Image (cartoon, rainbow, N blue to C red):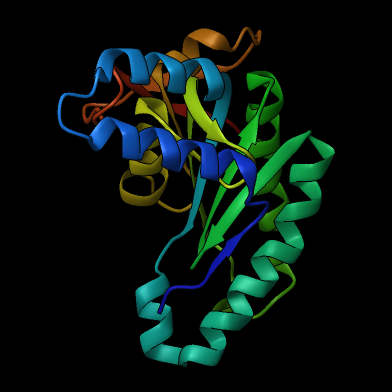
Length: 208
């Protein structure tokens, strides 16, 4: 079951659709159209993807209403932290969140605070209600289509790290994100597996 919530659709998406349609026409100057698309929508952002660990097993064990409850609880706990650290929630899809930040340091601080907040939350709830968070972070040029979606290599890499690679409590980042963060005292461990769209990947070393 997939639940998608999109925020802000309008003129940007219509303009992109028109340009993509032009690009598909026979003989189209794709290089020129691509430049127009990047001129219109190209921006530099930090991208965060979150996912909940063990969710399929939880649905099987406790049912779909528990699935919905956990999604609701996770957003209730995490969205205020995202707002506090100047993140923008682009969309919620199932048990995953896509968030963007202008400032990579704020994104990293937010990720750590999210994990620490959930540790306190889980200590006060029954085990079956635990929210176990996985986080992936990327940084670089993306196509930002209004407040509806973002696309790009770092988006794909952050998604793979957060949704496919990271385990509960882990914060995984691309090499580009690591380079963009100038935080004294932050330690990064290199990963053996590097997702498509990134040249390297790291695990953030932090204390809960």
